Structures are given as structure tokens and as C-alpha cells.
Length: 343
Image (cartoon, rainbow, N blue to C red; front, side):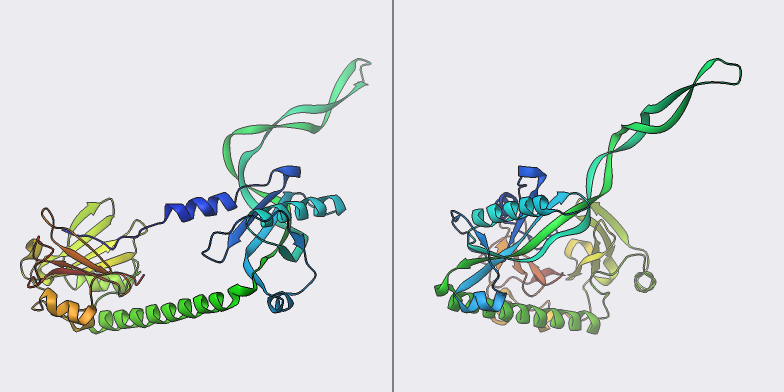
């Protein structure tokens, strides 16, 4: 039985982001705000445009909380349009908790794609009446003066005028906290890079294919052909190519990219044991107690009763399924181990 690393999504975070990106309809202006901090902020009564550059704002105790933009369909800016764009930006910035906005673009011409009904056949033609060579009245049709619309929605390129900038909140006491968060994010990113490098090294040393590789690439076809004809299982999560005599199963996603590699112990799910290297120096002979001495407690786990107990180490790019249904069995051994991208 296979269990991939859970990719949990915070529905609250999505709801907040969607709420901040709702359109500001006044004057046909659409405004959107993208936060760059995790903290949810209370709205301000109003916001204003500042002429200070970002270094000056930071020195005065302001903290950048996100970026903002506003757009309006059009091809040529004028004072009324730039005022509407600025109004939309300031309202959205205040709703997001900003005090001031540093504008980096004002009424610039741009394009965007949006769904709409494209132009269809002409419904009204211009007409002129004249006497023909026989002296009779006749009608001459000129250019179209009214177009109909197609009945099907499609993507259309629309010219828009855009203003954008950064949003700042006066919060002099946040500086140390923001710096600490930035340092922690940098540290975690460095750790993730190191873990990814370790994983890549293991994959290369074992002669396994690279994660993300396309199933139709020449290198992948050569590697798979060296193991013979696979048994293929098709699930909603993707297609599994099982090389049972070699203890290997490859999971390809809907885009035909290699998203996970499964390495099996002897007779697990009908596989023979995988013979090459396991990640982080592990062995199929290791007990769960020994594995947790090396990797620490799992970041997430599950199973018991119905399915085998599994332990996820998403920050290391691996998940271990043990040969037991019990969550308290520290002498269980690896049933199979999966390798996927570090998260």
C-alpha cells in the first residue's frame, strides 16, 4: 500500500488571500494586494501615497507588508484614470493594514488575458442610397458599425493601464521580529537545500532516475528498458510503473513527470528487495527505533489497524512505511520507503 507525503493546505490562508485580492469595482478599477508577511493585520482608516523611497521608510520605522497593483481597461492614461487607479490602490492598502504606499508604476500601459465573448459577425452595416446606371435607387453597404459576439467564452488579450507599488505599515517595534523571521526563513531554506542535495546524491549513487524527469525522455526510456517491462497500476494520484523483480516502483503524475520513487523490501506487495542504496544510510534491516535515532521522530505519521504504520519526513523528502499495523511497535522494519521532493 502506498501513501505519499501529505501536501496540506491552509484553507484559512487561502481565504485570507482571496479576500485581499477581490476587485475594487469603483470606476472599473481592479485592485489586488499580495502580502509578504504571515501576520493578519487590522485595517487602517486610510492610506496615502508617500514620496519617500523604501530605505527612508525603513529608517523611519515602517515595515513593508506587501505589494499592490490596480488596473483599468484602456490604452491611454489621463489624470482622471490615474486618480481612479490611485484611489483603488489606497483603499485596498488601507483594508490590508497599510499606512502608506510607495508607487513604482503609475498608469503604465500593459496587457492581460481575461475570459470574454469575442467579436462575432457584423450585425449592423453602414448604408448609403444612390441611383444606379439605370436610374433606380440602390443601396451600397459600407464598413460595419456594430459587431455581434461569439457564444463561447475564450481568452482575449486586453489593453490595461496599471499602477503598482509597495505597501508599508508604521511598526517600529517589528524590525527585530521581522529580521528574526527573515533569518529563520533563510536558515530553513538552507537546510532544505542541504537535504535536497543529500537526496539527489543518494539517487545518483543508487543509479535511480532523477525526480521530475519526463517519462518520454530518452534517458528515462533507456533506464526503464534496462529493467524490463513494468506492471502498470493507474490511480487518481498518477500511474505507477512497477518493476517487481528489482524492488522499484515509479510514480508519474498527470504531466508524465516522475514525482516519487518507491523502494521495497523482500516480498512487500509482491516485490523482491531493492538491492542498492537507501537514503540517509538506512537499511531494510533497521528497526523503527534505530531509524528514529538517525532521523528523529517523524514530522507526520498515520496508519494502525487497517493500513501499515507510516512515518513522513517531508523536510528530508522521504516517507517510510513499516511492516506493522501498530503505532507502538519500535521493532518494526521498513516495508517500503518512498522518495519525493523535499518540502
